[in-house]
Image (cartoon, rainbow, N blue to C red; front, top):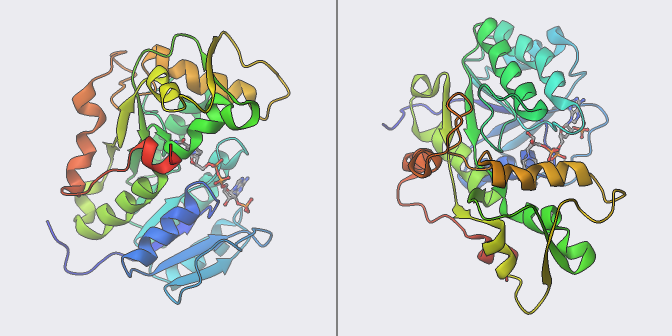
Length: 291
Ligand SMILES: NC(=O)c1ccc[n+]([C@@H]2O[C@H](COP(=O)([O-])OP(=O)(O)OC[C@H]3O[C@@H](n4cnc5c(N)ncnc54)[C@H](OP(=O)(O)O)[C@@H]3O)[C@@H](O)[C@H]2O)c1
C-alpha cells in the first residue's frame, strides 16, 4: 500500500559495509536522511547531497541523542553498527533515546543470517537486542539477507591467496545478496509501506541462492578451489569469523530461510520478503564480482 507522507529517517552507524550504502539508497530515491555519528566517526565516504544531514553526538548519551531525534521529528531509526566491533551493545542507548523521542520503528543492525531465537554468539547477541527492543515497547523491523556478494572473496580468502578455500563440504545452499540491493530494499520498503505494517516483523530476502562449490566454480580459470577444515593461516584477518560464516552453509543457517526454533531451512521462506519489491531485478554474485 502506498503512503501519503513518507516517514522521517535517521541512520546510526554510517560504516562502509551497510550504513553508507543505505544512505546512498535514500539519496537515489530523492529521500532525505539524517546521519547520527560519533564525534570521531569518519564520514568521508558519505554521499555529498543536500538530502543528507549529519548530527555528531555522544551516542552513549540518551538525552543528547533523544534531543536530536526529537528536533528532527524522526519516525524511523536504522542502525548499521558493527557487530564485530561491539556496536550491538552501543545500540542500547540509541534505542532508549529513540523510545524517549517517540521514534515509531527501529531497524537494528541485522543484515545477515536469520538471528531470531539464535543460539550462536552473533545471532544470540542480535536476537537478545531485538528482545530488548520489545521490552522497552519499541517496534522493530529485522532484515535478513544472507551474505553480501562482495563478502565472497573475503570469506574464501581468494583475493589474498589465489585459492578459493571452502571450509567443509560447501554443498548446502546459502543466501547471497548484493549490498546495493539490501540498501535499496530498506529504502524502498520504508518509503512504500505503511509503517505499522512493518512493526515487529522479520523480512527475509535473497538475491541469489548458491552453494560455496557453485561460487568457487565462478573462479574457474582464475583461481584454484580447495576444500579444507580450517583456513590455512590463523593470522588471516578474522579467520575464525570467516570459518564460522562458511560453516553456516553446511549447517543450513546461512540461508535467509533458516528458522532457529524448528532447526529447518525453507527455500521459499528465504526469499519471502522479496515480494515487497516486486519487479526488482536482484543482482547475482557473478555480476557484482565481475567474474
Ligand atoms: N551479510 C554480510 O555479508 C555482512 C557483511 C558485513 C557486515 N554485515 C552486518 O552489517 C552490520 C555492519 O557491520 P560492519 O562490521 O560491516 O560495520 P561497518 O560497515 O564496518 O561500520 C561500522 C559502523 O559501526 C559504528 N560503530 C562500531 N562500533 C561502535 C560503537 N562501539 N559505538 C558506536 N558506533 C560504533 C562505526 O562508527 P564509527 O565510525 O564511529 O566507529 C561505523 O559507523 C552488522 O550488523 C554486520 O553483521 C553483514
